[in-house]
Amino acid sequence: MIFSIVVYATPYSSQAASTALQYCEELISQEHQIHRVFFYGDGVQAASALSCPQQDEIQLHNRWQQLAEQHDLDLVVCIAAAAKRGVIDQNEAKRYGRVNNSLGDRFTLSGLGQLVEAGIVSDRVVTFGESR
Amino acid sequence: MSTEKSCLIINRTAPYGSSHARDALDVALTSGVFEMPLTLLFSGDGVWQLRKEQQPDTIEQKSFAANLCVLPMYDIDRILVCSDAMAQRGLSLDELVLPAESVDAERIRTEIQQHDLVLTF
Image (cartoon, rainbow over all chains, first blue to last red; front, side, top):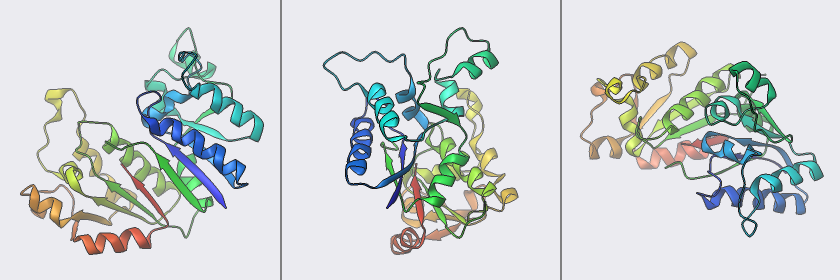
């Protein structure tokens, strides 16, 4: 079955941010296909390579990076949601005149069309994160 | 890309306390680009999003109701409101910025079943 995952949950504030990662790991182990993981709202913070969790905590950003590398996952971050939260790549840093960038190299900034397209081509779309 | 799949966006949150209402509207407008049949359902505190006479400038926010008013221009005109949520908050259809259809809980269950993609904000 083809799945897409939508993550609204904030890393380290919401358990759902971790559950999304574990869910993806389980999907892969059960040999389902993940078309895309789309990060939206506060969920975009998982894409920040500047996050420094304590050593005994879940290394959310690194785990997403590793999973994407091992299984060629498409990790897409909503560009509008990300830019206003300081999650930007080199291009955006240049565009906005910022010295630093923060986006992990396995993540891609793109538009909401990627969320809608994921809904069209996937058999299931599963969202993680309380909407309030 | 056009699609036979349909999308239901459920709005459950008030317009200014969080970014969810605006996030949902952005997804709605994007789905229009894909010519995806779309229904918007407002339930719970989400019905406040449609209330006329919003004055968000006092809290340095942009008018959400004004943004909702562009929906008909994107051919998004299937707008449902939960009748219980409206009654609980003392709201009537003529106090809303857009024409909407009032639906009960049973009908909401049917709508969720009938749509391929359901996103909740």
